[in-house]
Amino acid sequence: MAKTSMRGVYGETLVKLGAKNKNIVVLDADLAKSTQTGKFGKAFPDRFFDMGIAEQDMIGTAAGFAAAGMNPFASTFAMFGSGRPWEQIRNSVAYPNLPVKIVVTHAGISVGEDGPTHQACEDISIMRSIPNMKVVAPADSVETEKIIEYLAEYYDSPVYVRLTRMTTDVIFGPDYKFTFGKGIIIRPGTDITIISTGIMIFQALEAAEILRSKNISAEVIHMPVIKPIDEKMIIASAKKTGKIVTVEEHSIIGGLGSAVAEVISEKYPVILKRVGINDTFAESGTPEALFEKYGLTGKNLAKEALNVLKTKNGK
View 1 (cartoon, one colour):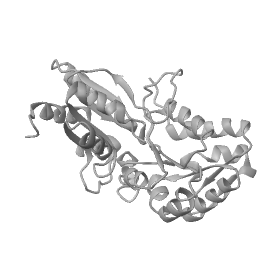
View 2: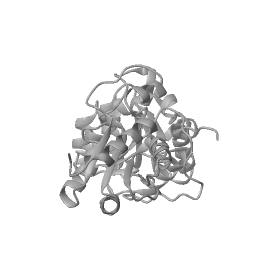
View 3: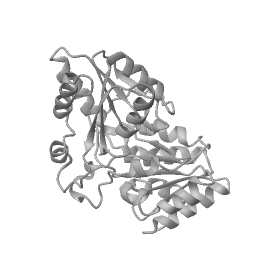
């Protein structure tokens, strides 16, 4: 199967939606070629605004558009879209609860050779701590398209969408329907639960296959919406398997693993292992080499799951 690009589909979907909805405006911060928003700019130059290397201005302007009744999508790299304009996101977007869609690309260590200065592994934590902000991380290009289509009609609050740089396989079919705030059971199981977000679903499925070869039934859950997270699905799976492993291309601090831990610690305590970036900066390298070094592989995930299965009463 040919690999596809989330950011490529993002740009194409904006063009499709822009033709239908004249209120959609798109803003970028001198990275329109990389984020693929340049496609919208070419199709609708009067509704495209390249703010230059000025992310704070981009978010402030997007907030103004939203306050005036427009439908703004603001894009840049995840590192610059979550870090540089944090104050503007908090005070100008989230505090007045304006429906600005912040869609970032180049998230996580799969940015690869660009190195730690461009590898946003803290952005989920930053965004989910802000009141009113919603956080979304699609698994493939199909889900990306469905999410952007949904957000074009979503006016309740601001949303942060996390896309990857690398091309990926496609896991969902054309009939896939995105439901906001709901997880997806990709593979039912009874012995252990693996919960992933974003492109880590592929590693989770690989781990489940490895475990199946050892007669272990792993339930695989894809969690596209990290805030608000699907508490009911997490609790139901925890009751079924009694053990959970989370995996994310993000720090284990404040991301998916933390969100799941918050749910189960208060509502149904079970053994949990968080797999992700272990409070460190990564380094330059190919995405595949970095995944291997930092344990974001199906093989390592299966190993962690086996360790959890050996654990009893938290010891």
